[in-house]
Amino acid sequence: MTYMPVDGKPDRVHVGARALNLDDWIEINQDYEAYVAYKQELLSTKHDEVFVSLPMGDHGSCEVLALMREHLPRVFPQRWPTGVPVDESRHPLEAASLLVQEDLSLMTQVGTDWVLSAASLCFPSRWDVRDKIGKNLVGIHAPVPHYEEKIGTATQNLFDKLTVERPIWRVNWTVMDSGELHQPTAPRGPDAMQLSSENIEQALHFRRERQTLRKLPESGDILFTIRTYTDPFATVVEQFPEFRRNIGSTIAGASPQTADYKGWVKILNDLQAWSQA
Ligand code: HEM
Image 1: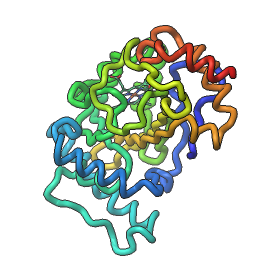
Image 2: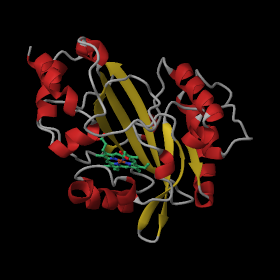
Image 3: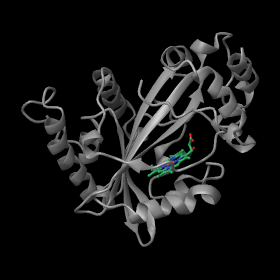
C-alpha cells in the first residue's frame, strides 16, 4: 500500500497537486490481471454504464492509445517484451483502458471550459459517468460540497496552465462500507452507510484514488487517470498504525456537508470510538 493521505488534520477540500514524473504515469501491481478481467466483464455486461464518448473526444482518445503503446513496453519491458496487444475493434480510449488498471477520462477544451468528452470508468466512487459526459469542471463537481467556492478557480487554472512537459498527480480518499471497486450509483448522502458489523476493521474500507493529469501534445486535450486502491481498515493499520488515531480526528474535522456527501454520518460515532480506543 503506497498512499497515506490521512494525517490527522481536519479534512478539507483541497487541490494538492504535485509534479508527476512521466515514468510513473501508470501504476501496475499484483492485482493487474484481476482489475483488467473485471474491466473486461463490466465493459461487456454494462458497456453503456462504464463507457461514454462524444465525437470531440475521438482525436484525443487515439492519442491516448498511441501514448500507451509507446509507454507500456518501455516502462514495463518484462510484462510487454514485444509491444502491447490492442483490440482494434474497440473505441481507442476503451482499448487503452483495458491495458491498465487506471480508469481514463478525457477533457476537451470548449471555449473557456474543460468538458468531459470521453471516459472509460469502471470503478466510480458512487457516481454515474453518464451524468457527467459533456459537462465542465463545475458541472461535474456540482454535488461536491465546497468545490466551487474553495477550489473551483484553482482547478480551472490548473487545467488552463497545464503543459505537455509538466503533468501532475494528486490523491483523493474516502471511507466506505464496501471494498467493491465498481460502485456506480449507490446513493451518496447521510444515509449511505450503516455499519452492519461490530467489526469496524473488517467492515470499513479506506479507498484512495491516485489521479494524474497529462496534457496531450497533438489534440490539446487533458487525460485524467484514476487509479483506485481499496483496503479494509485491518490491512491499513497493519502498515500504518497511526491511521487508527488519525482517521478519527481527520473525519471529525470534516464539515457537516462533507460528512453528509461522503455518507459518513451514521458511522461517525462508531468510527470515533474505534479511533480513540
Ligand atoms: C485537479 C483536478 C481535480 C480536483 C482538484 C478535483 C477535486 C475533487 C474533489 C475534492 C472531489 C470530492 C470527492 C471526494 O473527496 O471523495 C471530487 C469528486 C469528483 N470528481 Fe474531481 N477533481 C479534479 C478533476 C476531475 C476531473 C478531470 C474529473 C473528470 C471526470 C473529475 C470528476 C469527479 C467526479 C465525477 C467526482 C464525484 C462527483 C459526484 O459525487 O457526483 N474530477 N473531485
